[in-house]
Image (cartoon, rainbow, N blue to C red):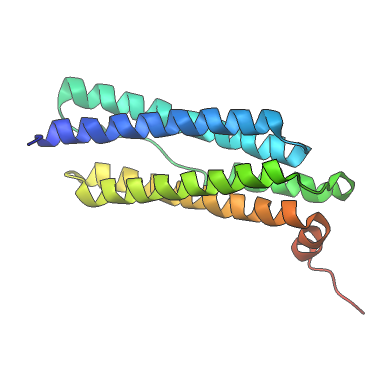
Amino acid sequence: MLDAQAKTLNGLGIAIQMEIDGRDFYQKAASESGNELGKKLLTTLAAEEDTHREVFIGIYEAIRSKKSWPIVDFRPDGGQRLRTVFAQAMEEPNSLTPAQATELDAVETARLMESRTYDFYKAQQRQASETAEEEFYESLAAQEQVHNLTLADYQEYLRNPAGWFVKKEHPHLD
């Protein structure tokens, strides 16, 4: 049976790999995206996955050497960078382009990945042996949920750009 430190390090190792896989997926999807919003959104998601990976590596090394969970100054922005990408798209309604099936497939895959990552972080949170660890996984799970909701919004945009724009602008009929 794994002791607490080995169990924590194992979970962190899995999380590091999940973030690497997520970053790689988003970078590839961004390079294949057919519209500017997709490229920006997917590139931003790739950067966030890489930030998570860097934090996990730091925690992993600290636990491995100190044998306890370190103080982590990790504060997700609550999706602010992702909302900025959509705000920019709303400023340029002429850039609205219908999606290709491959892009919709990529978004669906991304949403599934984010959902699985969320579930993993919630499980890690429940198994946490220290308050700092529990809070860290809780904040990561929340950020993964924001990623999933943002991808759902992007999915709606891809399916119906004009309808998405109208919905976001809340026009009034006089």
